Image 1 (cartoon, helix red, strand yellow):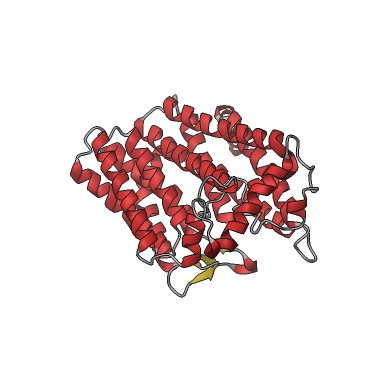
Image 2 (cartoon, rainbow, N blue to C red):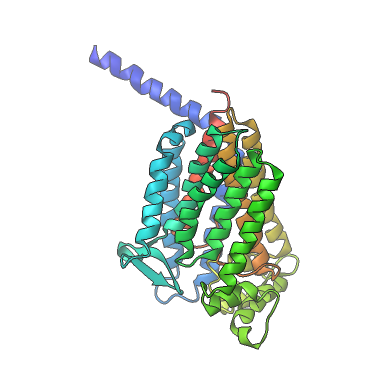
Length: 381
């Protein structure tokens, strides 16, 4: 009897797994996978001549992060996204606690910001990246409860909820991540149908906050230079202006079809600082040219299209909200990062999703794609 009972259980689990695979948004998954693979190639291209001993050092570490991201993806798609609302408060509290702890001696400083926890084997964990996912889930839950009834008091609560992680992130300081978090908040509120005058007030408050950050000494001088170099490349900003100038030159050098993989002179000689992270798009532009860059942008367009499409197909308003939050996050990050490398946006340190070297950002992006896929899988149930 036991043997007879064991067989059906195994068979049913296999059927469920097959059904789950059939309901995934494979267009989104394939597009993200192609971007991530291209990211590994470009990371190798931009770092293999700069690492002594192991030319695949950065690629291996990014591969580990990608593997962890896949594990997170597979875990999240097995949990009905509607159940995440039950744990959204806990996730929010834990995220805020991590953002606070990183500011204590437990955190580590790199490039002028205290944003990471040092992990064994030289790895780092950046809680501000996880805050993006947690804010989407938490705010979507609250906004969903008060759909169509967001008065000034509830809007104040929403702002208060958002201000805790925003304030902790700014103490690191990390204005780039805060800009992403603000876009998530505004995107959720816009989809929720908040009155236009309330959104206008929020935008004005956001502009005031950014102005205050820029003028009250909260940021260090080099951070201010990075933000303002796009409109003022004076003598005091030659170092920062050089970085962005080299970025623009690298992209321009690519021409129509690029210099060829591993053959870009700017990339091969290391003229673009931090090219594997914030400026990874320059390697694409130089070595793959306009054609390769257009292909990458097309893949990002597919990611945004499928995310927005899932928001419209969602069975409930909560699903619409979480997809809209992910859409706002990805759209701003893509526009800002690529615009930064082309010299039309300020340098903010925002990574290019699935492309830039950085484990925390990659795992968080995979989690967000899992969230969208979860909504897509349950659109009929």
